Image 1: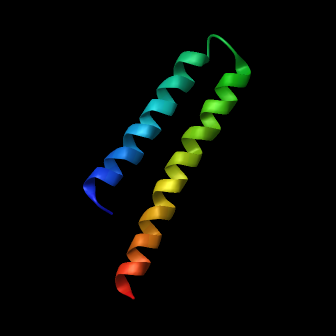
Image 2: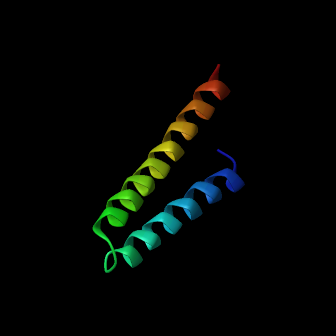
Image 3: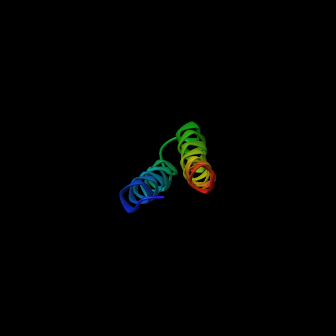
Length: 58
């Protein structure tokens, strides 16, 4: 995975985790939403990394 792409996924995950932390005191549904979005962005980063590695090997 290229450095800009990994930086994008890392920054996106941190942004969603920060939004989760801020929304804890405001609304429970927002906490759930941002938690799921942060997990999805972390998972998407791993999926993209695995696919790029698989394509590079073949």
